[in-house]
Length: 178
Image (tube, rainbow, N blue to C red; front, side, top):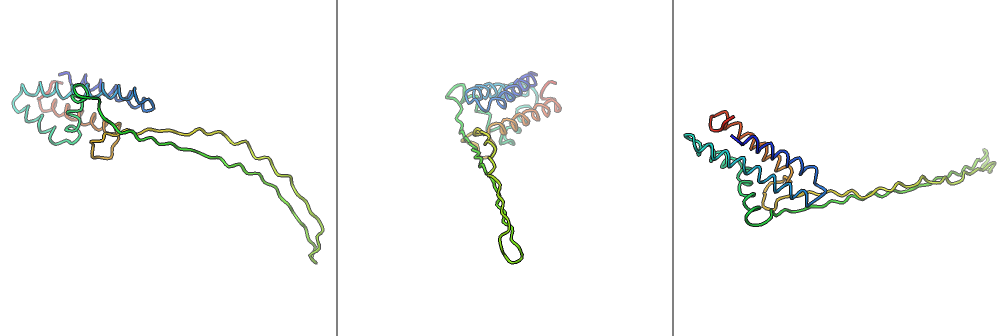
């Protein structure tokens, strides 16, 4: 009944996480709120599904068949009741160096006998000013207990898609109210 509302809330916090990847604290605040909203989706779904014949089995089947759902199921409880969620941070720094080059030319002209008959040179050109390119710093966050290659943002996106699929399936099969 309230699953769609909590799902929209989770999408909101996911969008905040995407925009806050450069600010570790804000990203983690949004992750905490995301985990709370997404956990509520499943809690509301279970509460409503249990009132229908076969609802508990329907819910259990979805949790058991999805590695992502099973992984996230306890993350909110850990975050609220035990400790902040542990993550690995990978920081990448890209440095760009600019090489300045000047050029000049020296030409010698010889006649058919090999005697030098003319010579000219150009002055070395002043190389253009080297642009200052600041280092590019990016961060990638991962869950240390996730066995896949996805980072937090990729995994949270997969989780949202999976939750959306569960809610739609529950609605289509009469376990959840549209």
